[in-house]
Image (tube, rainbow, N blue to C red; front, top):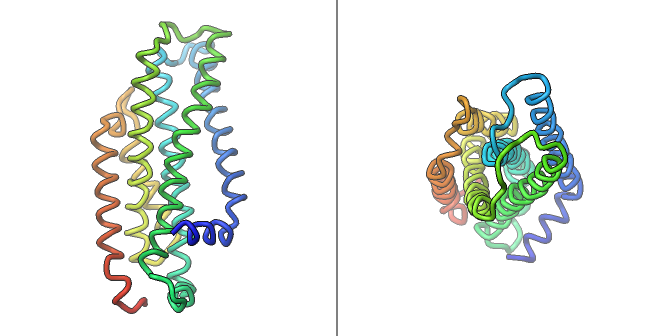
Length: 230
């Protein structure tokens, strides 16, 4: 399995996606800084406390990497079914399920790691900036950080599993555009805020969608060894 994953990483040219992730970190960080400074200097509604700020960062990170995952899924799976290059891969003496699982594992762990790492880096940046300017009041406690760390890990799993929902729908159309559009629709429903509330903040929602995404993906590929690929 690890050999297949390494081959997929080498074939996929994932260096460009690494740079893409770093760029996404920078854009999210800049957007958070804009909200931080304009919300307090221009009288707009800024972050009320540390918990509010950290949750906002997590929401932007989730939205970004759920959509990013759909791009990876399009490259690794959707386009291969669309262009029928998957026929060539299936012609090799490799278990089809293992091949698909290797591709899915890359996207799942890529999304999980990026959500965790982006939260970590941007949270540290935000806390450091606030230590200098002090616009966000309140005390940053160890208890808050521990609870937030657990929350982010659960959200990262939720985002990684949830991203698979766009694959299932995109595969029916064999369309990369439809896959990305589906992920954007999911983000709009789960991450859109009404005040300080969004569905993603209810941890059961992303976790349930993650389980649903994993289950539907399994059902979609469970017979891949025994059926002809269109």
